[in-house]
Length: 174
Image (cartoon, rainbow, N blue to C red):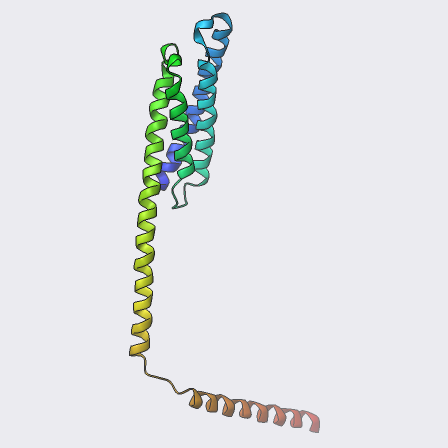
């Protein structure tokens, strides 16, 4: 999904430039003829949202977490475009961008839901595996005697102290 998000982010940025140019032309045309309505403004909104979502997708393409925010942005954009069907009559590409937004929004929201279910399942499996390993390790490992280890360390410490005093005494005699 990481490479898909990277490619989709690049496509969205390029598409945002194209939509911006188209909406600019429609805005200029609407100054001369009122039949264009607010098609250019809606196209500009699509362009800004495609640019933002493209940047978010590129920045987060290596993260395994889904871009639910991007999916919500696409769905919101699709709903806004669907409510302004009068603009579709003049600016036909808005319908294509609207369908594209709906499709991507649904893909990212579904990915978020499936990711959440998978991560919950994986977390419980991992917890069970760790607990099994701990109990296996505890049952298979014989008990060590800490007292024996402490005595061995104390003996080693005494030897080091005696070596240090011998070296000090040898250094002081010279």
